[in-house]
Length: 236
Image (cartoon, rainbow, N blue to C red; front, top):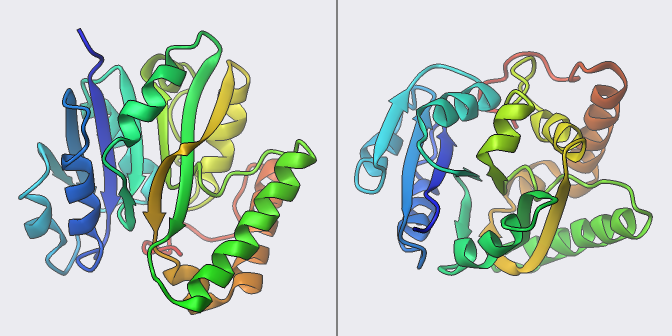
């Protein structure tokens, strides 16, 4: 029997993006799945939209890592797929990554994300991010950007590391990456493609946002404390 994949999406006022996200998850060619939405008291139509697609909706005023852990506790699957609300995945995404999770040493898999917006500015920002990630991978320095937005993790590995750190509103993906690497490999699969909104880069600017993430991640690695206060519920 095929493994059950539990898809966990955290939301806060995401009515602009969440329908495309959930539709793409519902339309995955892999059939043995459940969709769990954990909403942080949205004040728009996010929950109303989610009801059309989700198998379970949980509403709790919480930061992102807490919401992800809540979803994981309610999940029944052998694999947890954590997806941000502004992500859309191509229909074969789950089918593409699951074979890698069957490899003994692989504990998590993430894929390639292209800019959802078709603007020149969005593609330029994407190109800068890709160049940064390429340099980091070539230098064998862990990079976390895409891992934090759509990642499939073995349930047993997730539980072994104690889930996401709930101390801070950001850098939970950095913390998770380091914890998972103690138990196995994190695999990047370029063939597993999706789309991500470049809204944060367009709003804040690539340099400013990249520096914010870089220094937050570096500070977190050194001190286990994020630069951003808890919470900034709608971070970033």
